[in-house]
Image 1 (cartoon, rainbow, N blue to C red):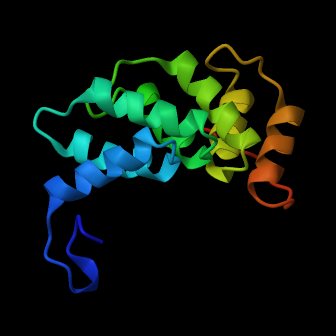
Image 2: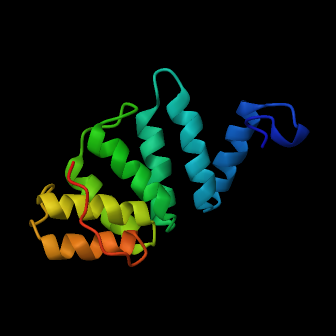
Length: 142
């Protein structure tokens, strides 16, 4: 709320970043996730810090951060290194943590046999079913 001035508060992104960092340092995964937005919004983005914060949040079992870091690494966005194999591992972790978008990415990679994953249509369909909450469908090929 403080970062964007919601709830009648005066926007103070610097103070918000300090509070997010304090939360992150205290083991709060959502603090690490929010802090990443501030770090990556800088010009140039501080990719190493952003990667560190997302990794910490992923390690603290916030699956959506595993997905976000996976996408940034797979596509080399926001100054992140291109690390597609690590991205696949992060999507797998995200799926295991219940982040359904991670299951979708993992299903696509499995369907296509990319990033060190063996091409396996049956496994891809099962992962996609998990992502869709049990509905049966083919994964989307990219």
